[in-house]
Length: 255
Image 1 (spheres, rainbow, N blue to C red):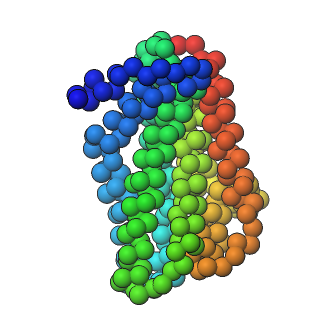
Image 2: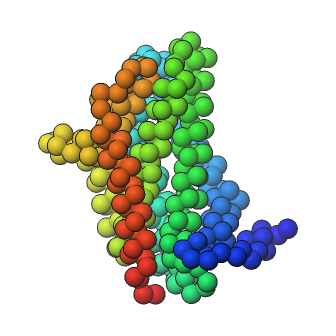
C-alpha cells in the first residue's frame, strides 16, 4: 500500500486519543522512511562511539567510559532539542499545525504523537545503537566485563536525560514562538551544570548528575549502588510536568 494512503486509513477513537493513530503514523513515516534515522545514527556513532574508541586507545577504560557518559549528557540532548523544536514550532510557523488541528484530532493526541514518535526515534538512534556498539568496544576490544544490568541501567539514564530535554523543548515550543528563545533556554539548561555555583545548587533537582561526574551512570557501570536516586525521581517528575504543560498550553492555543 502506498505510504501516503496507508497514513490515511480511518481509525475510530473517542476522547483525548482521537487522531493519535493517524498522527503517530505520519510521524513514524517522517522518522523511518526518510534520511532522518540514519543521519541521527551516524551523528550518534561519531560523537559517542568514535570518541569513546579514541579514549580507549589514548586514555584508558575509565576515561573512555566517562567520555561516553559526558558526551551523552551534553551533546546528545542538543539533537533532542533541535528535533523537538522542529516537531511543533516548525509546523506552527509553516501553518501545518493549524491545518492539522482543524481536522478531527484532539490536541493532547497532537502532542503525544510527537512525544511517542520522537521518543522512540531517539531511543533507537541515540541509546540502543550506540549502547550496543559501546559494549562491543569495551568487551571485545578491551576485554572489559561489565555488569549487564548496570550497563542497561546506565543506558536508561541516558534515555531519561534525552526525554527531559525533548519534553522541555516540546513544552517551550507551545509557549514561545521564536526558535532562538526555545534553543537558547533549552541549551542553557543542558550546559548549566558547567556554571558554578548553579551546577552545584541545582544538581539534585536537574538531570545533570545522571551522566556528568559524579555521574550516577558511572556507579551503575561499575556495579556499585547508587548514592542517591533524587536526580532520577526529579527528572521523571520534570518530564511529566513538561508534557502536562505542553498539553495544557496547546489546548488553549488559537490558530
